[in-house]
Image 1 (cartoon, rainbow, N blue to C red):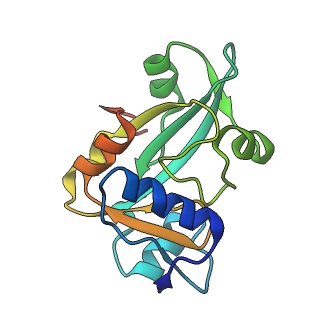
Image 2 (image 1 turned 180 degrees about the vertical axis):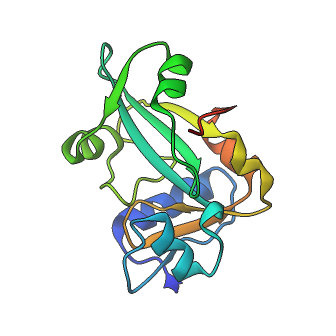
Length: 160
């Protein structure tokens, strides 16, 4: 683990600083694209990884970003009900265009376009979470309260 150097991770570090969050964005030598890879690199449980799952609204075309506990599968049915439209999985090009990040590194903040954000209520069971910082090699720690304050999103039951 080393301090962030990638421009995208540094941009995420700046978003955190601008919001008054003192968390340090760190980078790894190995990819942390999946929750399991991130947990192994950090030395935490998979459940403590705040993974971002991106969907696309079928009618609106808007990105729907669900920040979920790493050990949970996201229920597309529940998410569709919460956002009020059918959703589909987003492909890599859509994810990058909508969020500004590549799949495997989507941060919960600093998106390229406005997105609809939902937070998995199960993340509230931890004192510290780890979220992607914009690249498949970077993460940052934060509390559930900080996650909610940064995203201004609601806690929702999204678990399958």
